[in-house]
Length: 148
Image 1 (cartoon, rainbow, N blue to C red):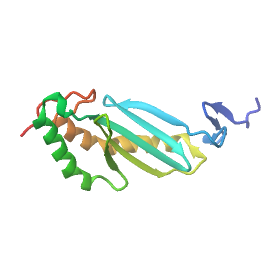
Image 2: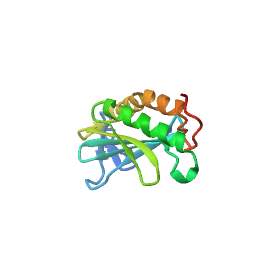
Image 3: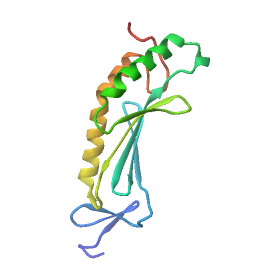
Image 4: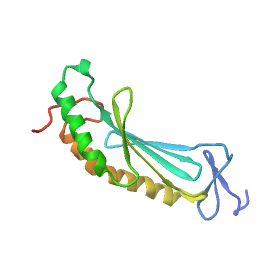
């Protein structure tokens, strides 16, 4: 392989300058990892980096913890308008609470820029995880009592 040839890396070709090029234009590569015990997924699609973080699972009415459920929903209502620009909260049908964002990420992108964007996203999430953890929303979906 010549020294100036792109190196295959999963769905990418990495050029000499460290830029990631999609091997096939229709691919939608993703990177998944856990941070503070929570799944984080980043997807590259159409010149955007979409990031989804699962904060935890809000108890259902069948779980018999209406006070905790009410406290978590109250916190979500208070925080939703104050999320950073571009971030949105979603409650999925299976009661998982997610925070999501998307930002322009022109291709080709350098590996360092991709890792930097993902790192920035988890740092933005940190205070929200702290608040929901204080209210008992654990990574595995278990809930303890919310401080009054």
